Length: 320
Image (cartoon, one colour):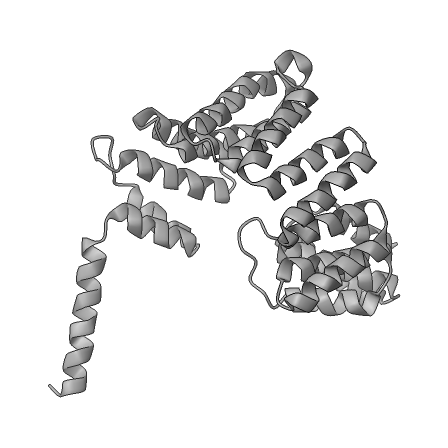
């Protein structure tokens, strides 16, 4: 065996030994972050209740089920994770998230049953980790959406937003701005969003989105372009500028350019999808009078995500 072959063999052996020695949960976490969900399931499914990693295994299986939109299975997994180890904030947080997702499409009776459970799950997460902003943000939405007899309260939502300000000021101002938007107090909301960007300029796209929502498109375009001047590869701002163009009917060439660039990017979790980008691009093509191209793009968007209401409406509109 020559020297190169020997080195290659040693490297492969080292890799295999490390893979075997690496705890299953660490392997599963890495696979999950790479989006290899089937491999995560195969790796963790054999772990039983008596295994030390049982709670963590159920948690990751819950994350996989949630990503696959198997929400009932996800709630079962998260419940089992919490039952096995109730000292991990993320287990409670994701249990609350799953209850909330199920409640969105449930009947009133089931929503009433799930409401206190999701609220309690997020409260437990915060009790275990005071800096868990995801749980606090979810709790704000709960207070804004739940009826009063279930604990809904704008004042409580503001209280939680002010708590976030102490932990992460810019995010807290953003959440307080969202609460004011819920109350239709746009002047107060704008003040919070401006304060947000003063605290952390990285949040400027949030202020731009506010202006887009208020149809103050010139202000929105200006802010997005300022962000992109500093960082041409800020893909969230690239998408949002394209979306603003699609909604406003302004700067259509620039909007098209941005959306085409976004489609070369692989979105991370919770970032705008390619389905959404194709839909916005279709809206731009429609506004430009290119109905054939718009129709094709609406169809692509719906093939990627059949639930896109605006894409369905757009396809119906140009098919008449």
